[in-house]
Image 1 (cartoon, one colour):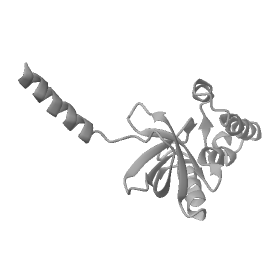
Image 2 (image 1 turned 180 degrees about the horizontal axis):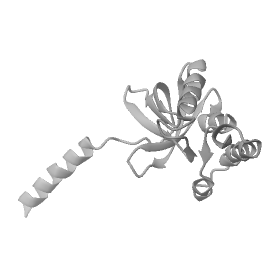
Image 3 (image 1 turned 120 degrees about the horizontal axis):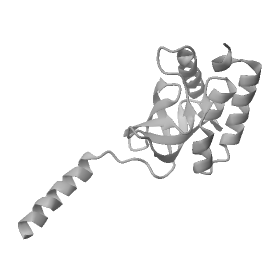
Image 4 (image 1 turned 30 degrees about the vertical axis):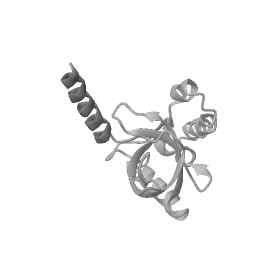
Length: 154
């Protein structure tokens, strides 16, 4: 019985080491790569790079119309603020990627994309997680829809 406990302990310890740690506390980091408009690789203060997907924000997939514009907008926004980001973890996506609110230059990237008419906001997720910041993002989305700009230009 002791042998089984010992083997289980070793196995469990190895699983803990092999599993990447997801941030649960806010951290400041440096944007090293903009994968797409809503996915960024951010270097944490310890040098570890974490992939972050923007909370409640959807942009067009690679190859789709406006996908490149969303990526460029996020890249430009981060670059103009020296790629310094404040990350507020919100959980983990179904695919295991960390989901967070990301603030660059005192503005959330989700808001920057919504204002540029390049993102959709998942208001159900915002309500489920009690995130009032989404109301502003959604207001931009509704205005873009009304004015038929960006994602709603056709």
